Length: 112
Image (cartoon, helix red, strand yellow):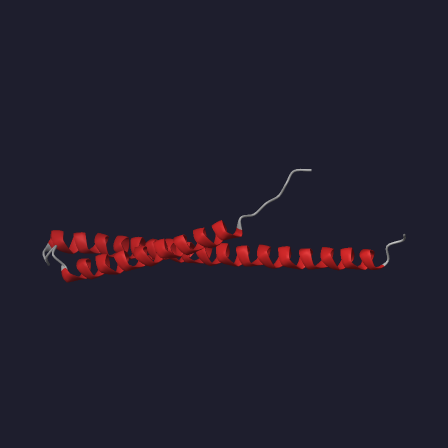
């Protein structure tokens, strides 16, 4: 049987790191959005400008939606890694306690 070992400290660290990445991305996206909003509608109001605006607006909205979704997924995965580490730690502690209780029971009933 192969050994199964989970390094919960690494899982916690990875979860925290992924959470930090998501936080930075959210901040950069917010700054980017503010910068874009600062430009207003630079394509103008003539026929060509209106056409550009009609294309830009939905594409921009679609892109921002997907950036937000990807950041939310990173946050969810970050939380998932931390929760998984906690689940493994708890299972390990419970297993250790059960094995110890069996050992204690056997030691108390040992035949000489």
